[in-house]
Length: 468
Image (cartoon, rainbow, N blue to C red):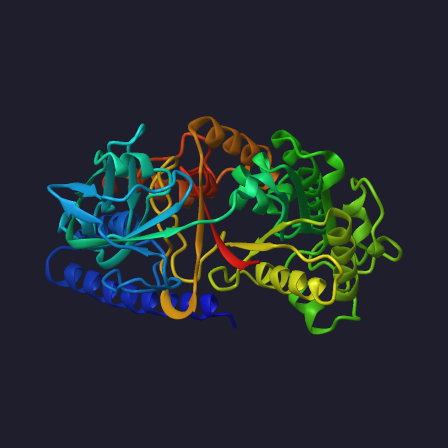
């Protein structure tokens, strides 16, 4: 069982205990006060839960985030004076800038998302944190170097206060947009969620999608299709998306590749590299149905067997053909999704002994262990660093800024992804309405799916895993 599954199991157990206690209280109220009181209280408590206590937050908001950054990355001299961030030394405009601050929530910040507002920029920013926040957090100031150097950058707590003095870290990286980039996507849409800005501007880009993402096809079963046919249709659509959508960003069709392995089967493939792992739902044991849009043949096309050995052979062939200087892939240091962990492992194995080696590996996290809502806040806002409580590994952030037009292009790319188009379940829509009315959370203007809020932002945040 993964760490996230363990946390979710514990969270559900706690909620069941709380539900039992609440039920006993309601019964007591009905017996001791009035028969109708439990009905009113039940509605009020349910609405309060949906508005304020439905987030999956598997840590205390009073815990300090803990990061280990490389020696020499800290920049001395940053100070907070009368609400302005001041720094005597200038910084390069394209540096990744991270500022550590101490936050303390107000009592209203336990019900409305606390945030740090950044003023003095061309467009103001608001980076949001957990309700009831109390401790060390990390702002992303990438793109704010000019305002910081000019002394124009103001910071203001919203439903929280900033304590003490901030700390600044600067991370300098090459301009990866001038290099050959390959994005490894376990599923169609992972590349767009994590790195649309980078791959849409790179000198040359390749998008390699590992799985067809065919499972959980209930939306297509509502059309009257049997489960297996619905899964096949969903897989074909997502295979098409993985080839077609990057064209919106100018990636040539021949450089968009779908490997067609089956969703949530990569771990089983890795555990038994010679054994074929059929789709869980599509009644398929041949990957070639989902590889039909590829522009050229790969080693796995010979037999279509969904094996780990075929996956590694496909990746090696692609690496030698594309010769990417930068590979963007999920990082298991932050992302707990099983297919994402296996995608990372597959790339490392494919690179072993290969004649071509990339200069840089950049990691991304489209999911988190501890906080399903991260990045917190609204579409268009900056992306603060995610929760982390382990300093065993040094992490080097690499952040890209997106102008409004780039955010809009990214939103349209996500909107073309079939998996993000179906409506949310009714219960989730009611929850979001309650959170909008009672907790001040704004819906995304780009779409209903949660990824429009999470991913269409002022920043894309990656992590330097290897740098030559």
